[in-house]
Length: 319
Length: 281
Image 1 (cartoon, one colour):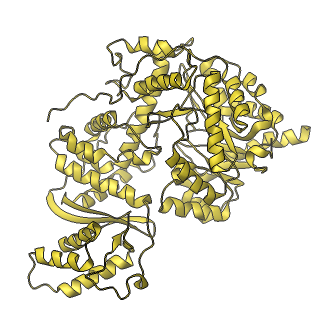
Image 2 (cartoon, each protein chain N blue to C red):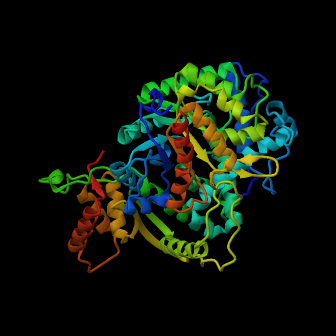
Image 3 (spheres, rainbow over the protein chains, first blue to last red):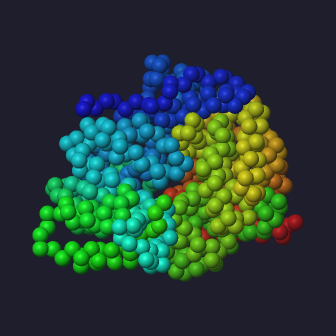
């Protein structure tokens, strides 16, 4: 897929009225200013010189922003344009260290810029900023080429950690909730904060190595998060990208700490079936039937798995 | 004023912002702090570690909520989902008042995550005041609106910022969170006398005060909250205290955050100005 230059997804706004006498006037002014903020910065981290309709941005800015004795309208608007991009890029920089390590800082910043130009934030919280990043990587794989499958796996893993950190939970089931129910009737819900991932790369081990390396290089260094351009890549040797290896992961929290747990393929199959609403009996029978294993003590293993999942609080009453 | 209807008739002293790098210290050492201000949006989550920490803090300290994303000045309607989550948090913290900014930051459901300046017109003041009233009625807690620092002004403005602030809070019958540092920053960026601002707002509506550090650049000043309060801001704070009384004051330090003790020491410098006010009154 050809990589296109980032453009703004916003509807091109018409120039705001010089007076703001109604809510619609206010909306027009705010649309124009937001359009200016959401437009990606140029190569020198400055505001783009040409507006969406081909006019000089200087001319557009002068229509609604007053100059002062030190800064013209363009320069005053540019302060906000830069602050917007530094803030959102820095947020993704911090939230996706694994993806950044895969792509390198420069390519990561290009991807993040293109992503946010297409999908500006639609949530009041920056926590949700990366919610559509995996979708974007699938839609426009050129930004992560030739590492799109690995990047996609990593973004799924990193987003799952956000969900596990502060996502909703339900009351874990107790023995009383399921007492007397036959397995072919028993349907179990899974905690909303639990993500089940079927991945083609061991991104869990890779991310641990990346974070360890970043902690070492950042030790003793204060963050300059909001008002500076994204940090340059470290000169230290990067962590080697993982080789292809199918893994199954559960990303969850326990006692309010985020964990990821490797699963056996059959564990994943059972949990995924439960998440779809299958009964416990159907989930287990299907997983056993599809497993290539022979000479395996299914009864014992399935009991241990269910005991572990129950201890971790993964089961709740279904919707 | 120290205790008024806009801060729930409380008489809080010097507080500091609750920030992640200090969690461990606060929970382990339990330092004496009059109150903590939390950023509401950081705790408007469904579950997990943030709420666990908040509950531990609430067990030991008084907490006041400060928001960054209601956007009273946006042309869009109030976000009902946002307000619902906010109200759930208000019930959890039992905050005596709640603050957010006199600004806009989203349009058509897309968020800039910034505190953007407003055009100072009567029509916009009316629209903004209606949103503040609607939010207060829903949240059932007094609201104080904070003046923001700004780097741009609009041709459309018909009045000064302090006239606009006054118009909004009178129409909404709400309180003011007076950010002294923001006034200083904007006064330098827009060439006005900051004392004109301090002297010409309804002092009886001030429910809380903010102080913070800023950064000077060649042609403008940025509100960075990443260093100690500078002398001109302390002077303004002293002046403000004479007008509004020993009002609950909070030091904001959000970037390059030093140790808890350093932040707390900086905040407590405010006592010098508060106590001198009492002595001369």
